[in-house]
Amino acid sequence: MALTHILEALEAEARGQIKEIEEGAEAEVRDIRKETQDRAAAVRRERKRAVEEDLQIEQTRILNRAKLEAQQEIMRTRETLMADVLEGVRLRLQGISTHAHYHRWMELLTLEAIDSLNSLKEKEGLQVSVQDQDVDLMKGIIENVGVSAAVKGGVDCSGGVVVSSMDGNIRVDNTLDTRLLQATSLYRTQIARIVLGQQ
Image 1: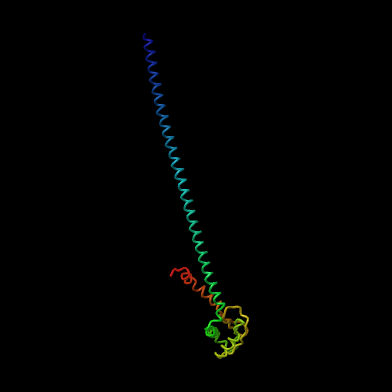
Image 2: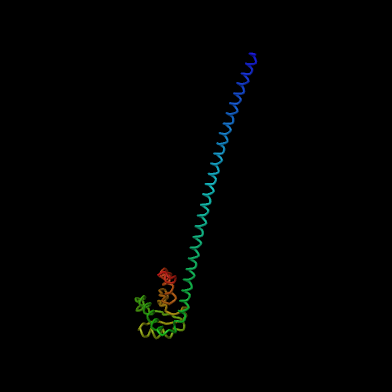
């Protein structure tokens, strides 16, 4: 019986060792499974964070593009309004020669241009050019102000005068169209504020 006891003891000890090995293996499997789940969760969190970052970047890009497009549309609208206002002014200028004060305005524009060329008027004389319909008016103005100047037509403008040296090298364009262009560039911001009601 002693052999049987020894065999049973060995068998019991083997079963105990098997049980310990199985329990150790199960614990190791649980640890590996937990580690794998933790890694998988970390990977999911990292991917989610990366996707959220990408989405945030895309959202910011879309928002910035929309803001830029809106600003460009506002600028185009403002430019259109400015162009419409200036075109309206140009159209009104086309009929200014029938205004009661046109003669006085032409006289002032002429004197201003002549004063700009003051050193030339005594030396070599001046050439005064106007639109065809203002030639007779300008001859009367030149006679009234007492300046020696040749008067000719052919200027394509809404009114005003171009005064130049006889050889044409020095020229002062004091037409209403040129003054409108100068005023537009000088006072563009102020004009925009008035047109857009921002004053």
